Image (cartoon, rainbow, N blue to C red; front, side, top):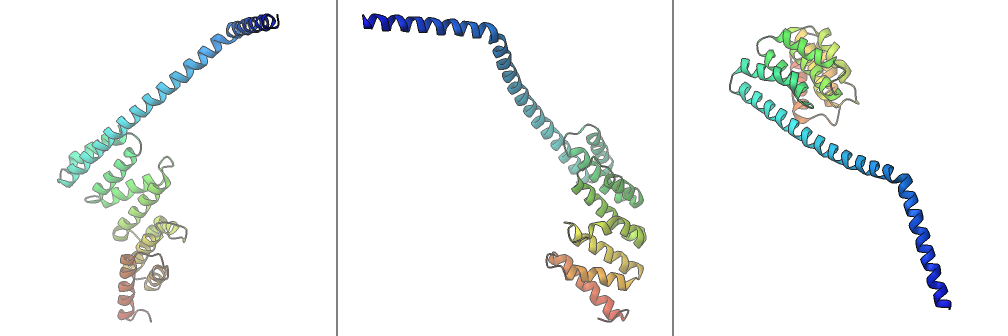
Length: 223
């Protein structure tokens, strides 16, 4: 009798659970299905986007390398055309890299135009800060030959701070500009800053020391 009662109770419990499951499914089944579909669609979307992104980045990279090859082979006009197309239609970081390379090619024949191109990049808030700083420094180097110390300083001095990763090159370009303009005292200050920085690259420090030796040997300043 006890066994029959236990069997009856189990059957009742199973039936109740079955009824509860039907009620839950009736109430929330569509929501659960919709949620499952959204998860699947989201996964498909992410995979598709990753595939598209990788393809686009690969294609842009191939275009960039092809443009560099044209430039290396002396086909400047073709290289500039390819880089111009990449600026407009490229993916990821390649458009700004194309702008940087175009400005470098322009520097071979039009220094003033190249300075303008680099300073435009440096002022573009959509460009990553590291590339903006690199463009600013490149403009400063061009201005050593074509501009005044004040123009070089306007581009480079903000990069010469102790916190800047580009401080070594920034100090060098400022020292070179001061040296070229005949301001040997200011040149010495920048070259000393290079030599007093224990993290200055050896080649930069060697050039700074050489120019300091020239300044001293000229008798313009005491050691």
